[in-house]
Image (cartoon, rainbow, N blue to C red):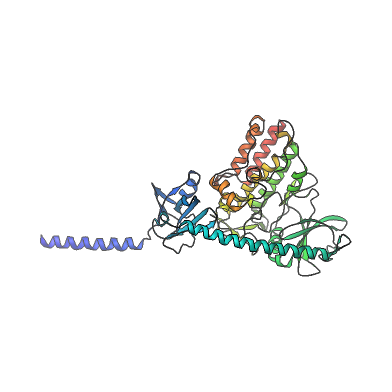
Length: 481
């Protein structure tokens, strides 16, 4: 009996050792404090299993904390597992100020996000530093503006622009610039003539060569010809200096921004603008295979009323693909973004059109899954549809549309900052105001529902661009019935 007991004890000890070894071989999931606002619950709940105030991470070893700073106190907005795997070398939740009013921490030990290492003095210090940096930046910008004005003065002679991007032989003809159509941060667009027809000549300075190559790459993709995409005619190098240019279809009515600033439209014309714009984006997002040619899905990445042009027939075309990303199948089959150097990995130039997940910094702009890029485009599309409809005479009871407004201009003013957008769009979950009287119009409720379904805070809940096209077709049928 004693021998049996001893053998049983040895067997139990051996099983315990095996169990311990087994437990050590299985990586333990990170446990984080879980506390989020109702708006963020769905998104962050997907990062791991939630039990009361605890979350076990599924995809990362990092805990995250986002805090809103007010009156010297840091109030948590998000305490959870991080959404994607990131670098989190520190064991404690050390505050990393993102901008005034918001701090964030990422850490790599259990429940570390529940104890923020922060003091009001830490928040004040960056403010003072940023103020001095802002002053230096303002001075540099002033000097740069002075130099640009001086250069422009030297280039002007008798009111005519002397500087030219060369006379390049293309398709048996030479184009010559006639007038400046638009000056942007990275490029200058001229109206030119080629073979007796008007063309747009988009000139990139030598410092923007990578951006030129990123945009040319998109235009040169197979099967990229579509009525909703600005037609590509060619590319070349300037005769003077090291600049590059794209030769493009000329849009007679300019950008959608300038068109809406000077035109209000009927419901039929407004619907035509909305439908052609959505159809162009749907094509851009589509993957096509014809014979041996393959067009991958492409995200625009910087949609705004300045990156959409209006043709003479009142339809929209997409342009300005310098921030676009080509989506290719990844190892798991899901689309992954392939970002060209100089394009696609930067913040959108038109910040007010950026989706909440981009404003919050919760997505990787330099690569990774491509689905969030398409969803970000649809959010921007919703703002553009709102912008167009707010200039539609038939959507207002007195037949007079208000003046052109940019998204959030009524709520936040003509100039917006990242800080105010994050607070208004992300934390307060606000969107541009939809007139209450639309509920009384035949097409009003369906139009308001379309906008809501496109600018949803949850990226996966947004419609696809093709679904937007279908909804607009339904609206057209309803209005013509």
